[in-house]
Image (cartoon, rainbow, N blue to C red; front, side, top):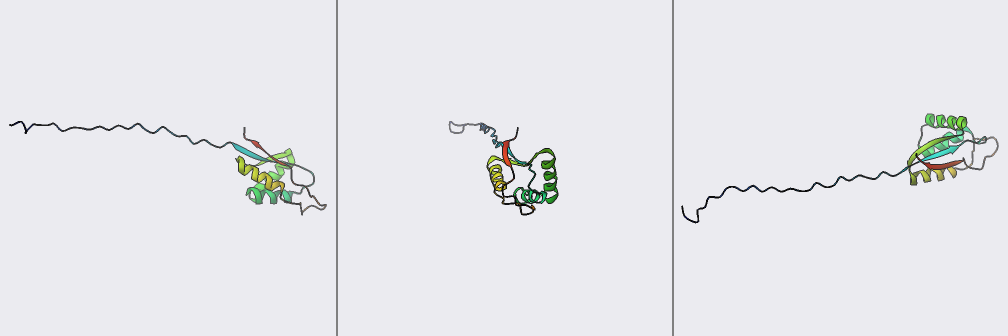
Amino acid sequence: MNDFDEVTEPQVIVTTTKPAPATRTKRQPQYTVIVLDDDLHTFEYVVETLCRICGHSVDAAFQLAVEIDAKGLAAVWTGAMEVAELKRDQILGFGPDRYAQQAVMFPLGCYIEPVA
């Protein structure tokens, strides 16, 4: 064996990487749209409003109308604040109750609140 014929052992190269830190997506706070009862708006108007604006079925909207009438209010939709504000504004701007025998020109009482 000469100086140029050295025996070399195979080399093992180990590469380590630090795992990426776990990222947590921050959930947006949830808000609920609350509709208030009054004695002038008809069930038909409330049901139509909830179907068109909140996307409820007729049966679900009717059950919410019953709850609004019985308890004085009901949570009709829950989600992100921006969408809750939009739905509140759409309910407030839905127009007169054309089902009422006497004209009801004011909107349903409605507000949003953060989910506890």
